[in-house]
Length: 431
Image (cartoon, rainbow, N blue to C red; front, side, top):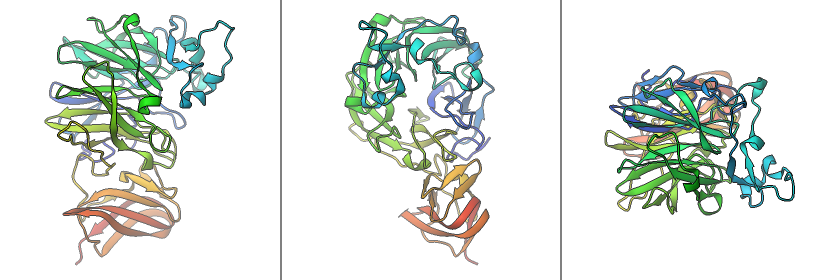
């Protein structure tokens, strides 16, 4: 499928959030969870998106399923402590969780909850859902690191970066959002956690580690605004720990980063890479990664849709490093990795990158209540053409305006006067 590199990168019906991008051979692969249900995050399956040119994208067949996990039904599950779920010393976010208020089993009960305490019952009695994954290659084998809604974490293997992944084994830890990183010296590291993250060096087999050597509190909510979604990269000798951050709006809508001169820290907070707070009225989280492909660095992230925290779509933006190694913050765009929309080119409503006033994207439609607006960043003109048409259901009219004009491009804002379900808009040159 050719999406011209514009955001979202995949067709409207494909929801792959939590994107971890890696380059294997001549292709870039993005590993993420899969939003399938309308009222919750994730599902029982993974797919892999990949590209050779950032324009043409392929979505694989199902690469992994909860049914491929031997302990998914609970019978073979080993329970480990969730080190970031400390009921006696909770973070501000964890303190609001019902899990934190569970009474201890006795005066000598441990402060840490285990996977037995955190098991989630999915809709209809389904197996635990698969949350955000990551992947790494070694000696021709691809290792898929995954976590489940019951708090367990594991790794499966394949001889193909798209899977199918098989032979899953449980890792000796508990939590969510695993990340894997292989350093330039060939040593590999595993990261995980929510509120407070942990990391450890993997054994040579890539499917085990010494749990006594794990380093906890690499990043914390208190010191780094850390929420979840660990991701590690290295550039010019600097280790970049990328993660969702709560420093704006007290919600994890910002993708932030911390740096270190070692893979297991200590890490220093550096700043925000991108913020998706305006992608949907109910935007709640972000999760993603940074990756260099064919000489250009990108940030991969997701946007929620349908006036929910769910139905999240994969997006990407180019990023730039300053001379000191810090990353310039970027804005969400509609053009993404492609070109601004040209005069005479239809602009689909679902390509809006920011919405306000109650507007939201619903499938291939942009829902616009009275007085709401949507932003398309960018279009390839700096003056509004006289000819402007649209295709929509409902009663009302649209008022266009331009913002952020610079050289040959602008951000296009559309404001609704009336209630409309907008499918597309078109600007044409005079005459």
